[in-house]
Amino acid sequence: MLATLDLAGVFVFAVSGALTASRKELDIVGFAFVATVTGLGGGTLRDLLLDVGPVFWVHKPHYLLVTTLAAVLVFFTAHRVEVRYRLLLWADALGLALFCVVGARIARDAGAPFPVAVLMGMTSAVMGGLLRDIICNELPLVLRRELYWTPALLGAVVAIGLDGLGLPPAAGGFAGFAAAFGLRAAALRFDLALPAYKPRPGRPWGRDVPASALRPPPEP
Image 1 (cartoon, rainbow, N blue to C red):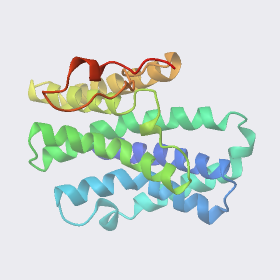
Image 2: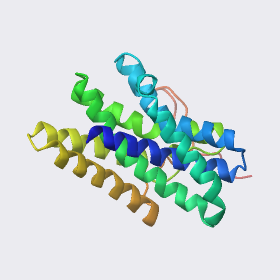
Image 3: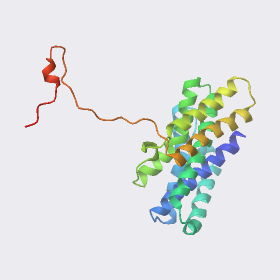
Image 4: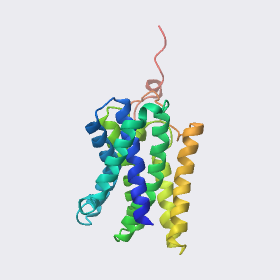
């Protein structure tokens, strides 16, 4: 099941990368490059950080075929989709929900403690999209207003948390996926976001500053 989810996540993320390439009007080689970076970027960083040996796609080259297939399909069909950016967001949401579960499970199987496994799930889920947006010169989704890191965090915690409670792996994986995708979908639909920092006037440092110095100067 884990291998199937991983392939599905790679394909969906590769589609989101190819959709971004279509918005940038790249050639088919550019499509394949962006799709591959998006589909494999998060898992590559995860494996490097976990030091689990060769990166997964090095000894499983069929992952490269999956990303190339996604790029070719989108290259010849993207013109039929009028709302490509909206489709990109939903494809990205699916990939995020799949990868946060897969990444956390792989890290847990490699012996990582719970907090590290959660972090690896989040890394798998968001880094491919981050690389995609940087390469294509777009504001990364992870830095936009809607919830993005938070759904990945929730999905990873639910998946491996339920595993720790003794539930079957399929149940934990499905619950983690549903939690992550549900929260990300709600964020897209209802513009949900965490409170943002609001700038305030600065104040002088030091204990001996008189109270009058903390007041704004009178208007001329």
